[in-house]
Image (cartoon, rainbow, N blue to C red; front, side, top):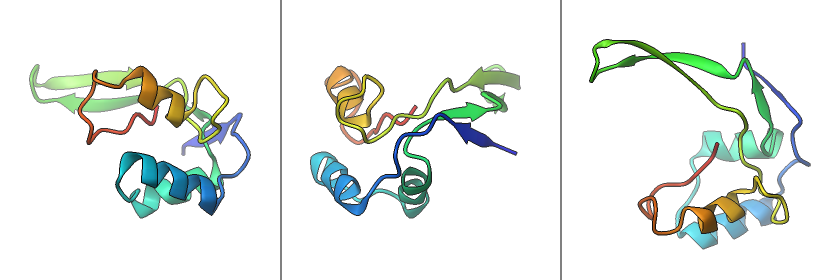
Length: 96
């Protein structure tokens, strides 16, 4: 079972709406709930397995932390949108 530690303060509706306005899209309800409950944090365990269709074998990856809605934090979604501007498609949202 996944556990999240070192979360930020719970996200409020204003912060969620601010993000949605910035990205010009509505967040999926599951992700919205995740931000309200956790607002970032570090997952335990931080690794997961998946099937790699290119190599046709099982692979492993990790997530060190989920980004928060805290605007002043280096690991905020707002900061990451600026960092990744013109580096990822506009329809992508960096979350971890």
